[in-house]
Picture 1 (cartoon, protein in one colour):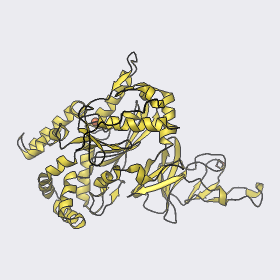
Picture 2 (cartoon, protein in one colour; picture 1 turned 90 degrees about the horizontal axis):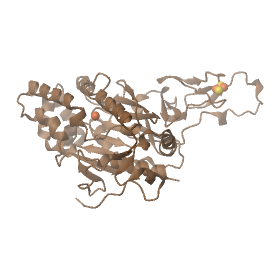
Picture 3 (cartoon, helix red, strand yellow; picture 1 turned 90 degrees about the vertical axis):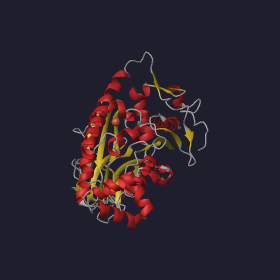
Picture 4 (tube, protein in one colour; picture 1 turned 180 degrees about the horizontal axis):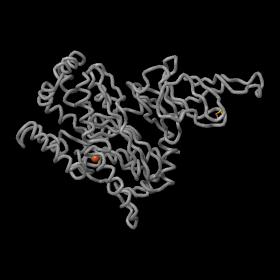
Length: 440
Ligand code: FES
Ligand SMILES: [Fe+2]
C-alpha cells in the first residue's frame, strides 16, 4: 500500500473546473443539453467506444447496427471473414444503408435510390448509372470505414477519431480485469447471443453503475429475498451462503472500490471471493456439470488460477469509460441519447466450453436481478429518475462525491483504492470526464 493523495477532480483553470468545487460537482453536468452536446463531441466522438462482440457476428455476412456517440455504424463480418465497422451512411446522399438491428446479408442496398454495397462496404451497383461519366469511380465510393477499429479478446472497439491512441493504451489496467470475465470460460470464449435486455430511463448517462454505496439501500428488499432463499436452500442464517451478499458489500478490506485510471473503475470484490474459494469450489461441485467445469478450468489455467477464476465467477464488476461495463453475468452498454435520456443494453454472456445446463443456470441468475422483471435493475432505473427530478432544484446545485476521500490510497499498480462504498469510482470517472471535456 502506498499512501498519497489522489489527483483533484479537475485541473485548476480547465474548462471542467467551472463545474467542480473540490469533490463536489455542479448538477448542471447531469442536466444541461449544452454540456451533453459537448460530451458527445469531446468524449464519445473523441475516444474509444465499445461497439459489439465478435460472437454477435460469427458468420460471413452477419451484422449488427450500433452507434458511436451519435454516429450510426454497421459492424459486419464480410464475405472475406474480416470484421469491419462501417459508417451507416450511403455515399450518395447520406441515408442509412441498414435500419435493422441485426441480420445476415451479402449486400446492403440503400433504401433511397438503390446504391448497393457488398458486405465489405464496396460499392457494387448504381441504378441507372448511364447518368454518370464512364470514369465515375465506384472503387472510391465504398462505405466509409470507422477511422479506428481494434479488438480486445473479442470485444470490438471503434473510434471516429483517427488520432486516438491504441486500444491497449486506452484500456490500461482495465484489460486484465476484462480477462476475469473472459477467463471464466475454459476456452476463453464468450458468446453474447442470448438476447438483450433493453431499457431506457429519464436521466443522464453518467448515473449508470459502479456505485458500491447504494446496494444496501436501493436493493434492500431484493437482498432480503436472496437471503431468505439462501437460508431455505442451504440452511442457517449464519451459513456462508446466507451471509454472502451482505459480506461482499460491507466495508470489508477484501471488497474495495478501485479507480484504474482513464475513467475505468471497479467494485473489486475479487480478493473477497478468492478468500472464500473453498466455498465456491464446493458449491460448484454440487452443481450439475460442476465437476467437469472444474476439470476443464484446471486443464486450461492450472489448479491455483482455476480455483481463483471459479471463485471470481466471471464477474469483474468493471466499468470501462465511457460506455462499457462487465458486471455479474452480463456485458452492459450505455447509450447516451440526451442529457435526460439514456438507453442501457444488457447482454447476458454464455461461456464457451461449459455445458448448456450451466449456461442456462447463469442466464436464470442474470434474470433474477436484471431486466424489466428482475429484482434489481428496475430499482436502479427508478432511483435514476428520482435523481433527475431532484436535480431540478438548483438553488444549491452541488452534488457531493467526497465519500472516502479521507481514507483512499494509491495501490502498488497505481490504482486508487477505497472501501467498497466509497466514491472512489465516481471520482475516477469524473477525473476522466474533466480531462476529456477540457481537452482542446
Ligand atoms: S441516398 Fe443512398 S442511394 Fe441515394
Ligand atoms: Fe443497483
